[in-house]
Length: 446
Image (cartoon, rainbow, N blue to C red):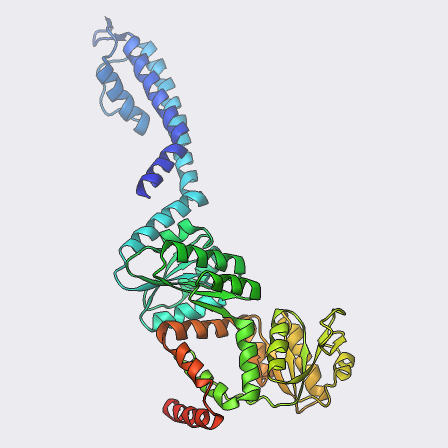
């Protein structure tokens, strides 16, 4: 990397250096050809190459005469005048080119990459490679730093990198501004480093996460790979080549919502065990059984419908799309309007899910539905953590935040590797046992 920086600088400075060399060579040659004069004014031979080069060297760089080998003839004075002007032009061109090179974003990136590689190479403690430093990645980085685990991050957004650098971490997080989908960048981040413990693919692009998972499995199969996805097809693709853990936040929340309706004590136990470290005990959620209304039939809406139907929950979907599966009872329209909500039976429903990808519309759906039925259990999808103040002001019964769901799952897998196996066993517990254990944990955490 150091060699590449050196040769890159030489390549970018090639023209200015050639100009300087030519100016020095011509100036020196001229002084060796032009006759001089002695102290009495008689003609004298020209300067030797050594004296000419010595004179040009300090004159061209300082525009000053430190010492003179002898008196100059008129021709030599004319030539030295030309040498001074040429050297000023040459040095000005070289300095401007050097400043341009230093300010060049590509050159700066090479310097930063070289520094990043050196720091990763000297890491002695275990670390995880975090691909993507958005809302999810930032939550994971904070939690890992709080637990004393080092993080090496890859993020291509400069705004997110600056946000990460402003965070008050106990240990510096090494960040590479690059595309995590490129295997070479994963290698620079320490994919084959002896202290690397795993790779967390947390970008908001399923294609990038898929590329990271494949590269990690091929280059270093011993590492644990945790990937975030939103598409069921990409999830199946990842599982097919042995990705250790794939977190689909839509499916995960929909499954938890369905289980909270069917087995509230089991869900409460899971909610406590997978909570983020350093945060308060999560509030209890007891969504009622009965008729539900789902507003939006995107990826999240489909996951909610699929999981609620699995538990035998009766529901109606409100969607602007007229063509939905024939076995789904639906109303064409927008959940932000009262008429489609009434047509879906909101006044007799027990709960509503605002499942759109726009936070403002989801809050509008929740407010409108609550006005029509004040006893509704309201589930709202929050897409951006930046809108937290709005959702706090509304105070829904259950808020789905994708970044927090993924962060909780990843941290549970990293800090408690056996927790996922334990949670699978807990599913077989009767509700009474889950209630007892959950109550004991609440007392310990309270």
